[in-house]
Image 1 (cartoon, rainbow, N blue to C red):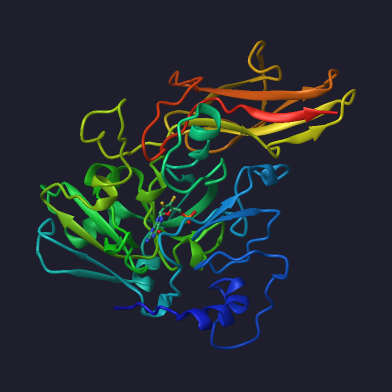
Image 2 (image 1 turned 90 degrees about the vertical axis):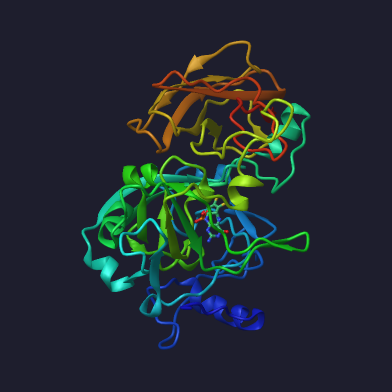
Length: 401
Ligand code: MTE
């Protein structure tokens, strides 16, 4: 296998060198890493995680939503959140190859693509958000009194980047996909995921052929740079508008099947369980939802008697954002925010609203997005045991002093 796990002590030694990204040779030359002294570490993540940009949660790094203030409509590679089931493998593009196999290929024999062969295919570039299905999970507990299991993300398990790569459909056609193929099973090259003493195997999640032919990319560049190690180097899937787990990183192989496929990532996780859902759970999650958030720390203090330009971001996986309304009095009155970006399905829309607070004391800021398909953030999200798809209006506590 073209897979080279790096043992823990070596990982630390390599960290500084690798922080500069895969554009640099690991073996030769001297790399100047960004000052990493103030950065926190997450087991298995290679890039620096400065606390002003990230909150470490287990093997994951959540971006601080307030730190998006003043940044553009895309998230830089340095600031992009990381969601790792295990740890980032260091793979060399030169000996990487993608294998397609299964009864859904005409010849039924495996077909391989090297990195160079992928780069020689026609490329496409598109901006897409990647958002973890569990983004906002902790708000089920803090806002609705309904705890959920899993990583306690607040709002920063999301980022938007400009991805360059090849269409998955082009690769499937070249590999000889059969007309009756229905499902794919893309699989990562990171270590098998072990939880509660059970080895669930490598991260893999079925993807319908129909979605693959719609808009899925095999991405090798992120914001104009080779894909960083933590984000799937050398090649990952980008599955626009779907839950982040669909965008398999460090892609190694894809099974092509004439029968529907399953994996624990569709049977045990990434579907909705609980009293509000069908017995046995909902269908596996596909589309993300509609959201908005202030670029402000929870519990921020704002000066009374001063004009503040509040800012935030809105996004929807279903349709372009149409409006963002805000309330600064806990939901009694609402007014429209000004949108700063042209709304596009699956991209950020930055918004702003002026506010001159007079009364001192605690206050609750709210924002509510409606998209062009008529989806609006509800007051309460429908709870599910694993805390996916939190879409409710966020009650953002602040103090006016
Ligand atoms: N792919 C592999 N191979 N291993 C992983 O742990 N995590 C998934 C997905 N792809 C994961 C993966 C999840 S849950 C999310 S939300 C996104 O990657 C996160 O992508 P990022 O780390 O580049 O932000």
